[in-house]
Amino acid sequence: MIKLVRATVEDAPKILEIKLRAFASEFETYGKAAIPPEFDSIEKQIRTITEQPYFFKIIKDGRISGATLAVDLSCGVFYLASIYIDADRQNQGIGTDALKIIEREFSQAKIWRLETPYLSYTNQRFYEKFGYKKVGEYVPPYSEGSDFILFKYEKIM
Image 1: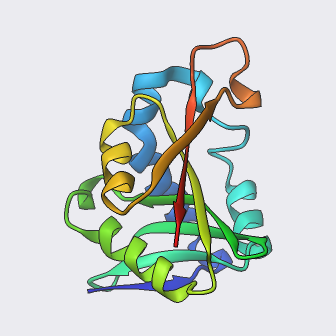
Image 2: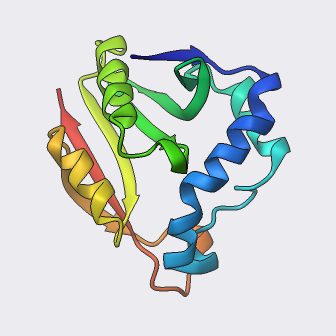
């Protein structure tokens, strides 16, 4: 069983460490084009924790196993800005449980939106299993001039 707990500034170093491990294979696949500005910055991690009301650490067996960020875009539209699980804890159902909790806890959401990289087939299957549909694609501003593409997904609740 997992819990989603509001992250604190004290959690920032551990969460950043987990995030970097969780996305390491993505960066090997895509290279620098896939890395948003300040992705590996502790200052950015702290800002996210302090400025985003729905940034949660994912706790399993008493330890931080990942994190997730939901953003209320208003009018019942929410954006799942991130959900990641530590590399050594992936494929154990933690992401599945976390997504179920997020969707349940934000029952006011009428629409969920998210993005995932174009070659991240595992992520695409994961979201599609939960009813998310691909609705578009684009090159993010930090990747201009590269072949890196993000797929946009949406789920109508």
